[in-house]
Image (cartoon, rainbow, N blue to C red; front, side):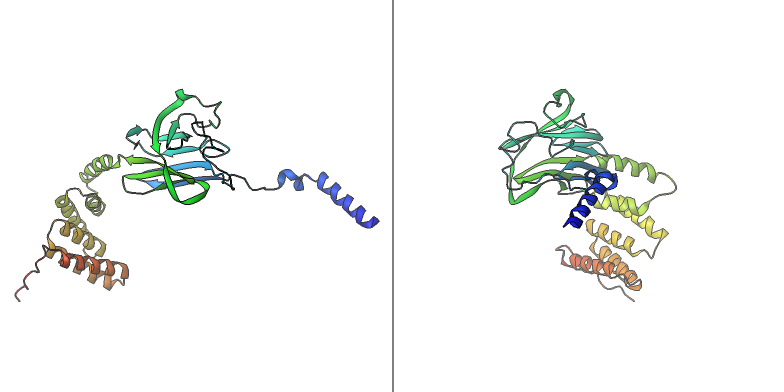
Length: 294
């Protein structure tokens, strides 16, 4: 027994005397873990930094987070959101930059604020004169209970996405729009006037965004002049021709793409062409071309 007491005392002395094993060095988990998400959007990124509290059996909105009161939109440090390019949020123009994300939750509506202050995390520190924009958004009911507070970027399109906040049985969202199309179209026009021209990229952009398909066809043909065995370019040409209702031309280009992809053992492009050829043949306006005379 005496030996046990002595050893225990010695261990206690070592723990107290050795700073490398004291309590300050123990990596305890955060009750509300901090996270940073980075989502590519349009031609840049949206980045969000926030801490994620969990409900843990508590009633959140109207209790832990009171209605109509300042909320840091998370826990611990201030929540921030960055936009890599100018955007429009719920109809309001927002310049590229980093903002504090603050909210005033309500039972049926929230007020969400973008602030110039990147450190405000309390009602006492909040100053309305630092607001860049205020948005009033409707509360949506969650189908599934959300235990841990979550901010995410969803419903992604080339030019739009939703900034979504959800916790417990509540979801609110902001609609984010990009101005990239006007900027990229100008850049394409400028670049295509030079000697080194990205014909395939420009044609693909015009096709994907429903722009001038005749111009896209001109560019894709230029790309094929430079690389006539590029089956991915032949597939793009077929899609453009289908969009221009040149169904037989599209079928011919897709067949060419299929044959080249088969020679290269590219099963994915073979399947894509099979699907496209089936779509072309099923189009109501499609009339098969007459066989060419030998």
